[in-house]
Image (tube, rainbow, N blue to C red):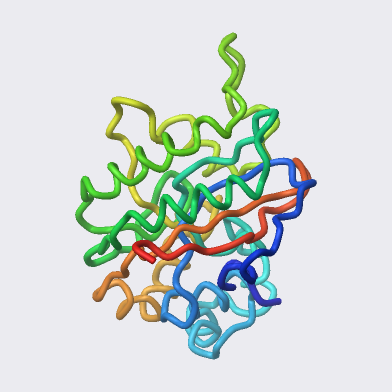
Amino acid sequence: MLNCAYLEPQRKGASVKASLARYAVYYTPQPGTALASFGRSWFGRANDGVTLQAFSEAGLSGASFARIPAAPGRYTGLHALFKAPFALREGFGPDALRTRLANFASRLKPIATGPLTLARSGRFLVLRPIEPTSAFEWLAAECDGAFDDFAEPAAEDGRDTCAGLHLSDYQRQLLQSFAPKQGSSGYRFTITLAGPLDAAHLERVTQALWPVLEEICAEGVAVDGLSLFGDAGRRSSMRLIGRYRLGA
């Protein structure tokens, strides 16, 4: 099952499906890159042989491999959060949202992550830069603010701001604790790979994945595009609408 998160934008002039209930802005790797290829094999389970062999040697092949929880999900695929899922405010349409993102991305420059590392965040295995950079904090804050007028206002009566959102535990944690807010600097560029898992299982998955990701981590990647995702409601998965290159 190949992951649709690596397709390029829709053909020019195509309309975004109007019935989608929520939208989000993520980073997904440029198609054809090593990170994109890994993401397809990892979340789609269409292994390239290298990943499968690594898990076989770690005793995680076959049934054990299939039971490894893969967050954020095999259909959303490999991504980093920049704008958490939101419903469109009344009077705003999906085509206008897509145009806003394309224009927003065109004014930005790619950002290099620097070397990456596999790390644990609670019960989750994540991929993130070894050294945090303020450039990502700035991009997250700008991205959050650029689409505030499209988003339904968040609850202001003390209720859970995640209520009604179809998020993994890790995405819920990000939204509550690290989502970009005006005046905050808690954002950290993070790609979730697996979880929730117990400590022993996390260690085995980390050891198996490291040989597969070591070269990618050493070189780092360039965040050179932003992707618009949407879903049809709480029970459906986020699917790619379009990927927009920075500086295009």
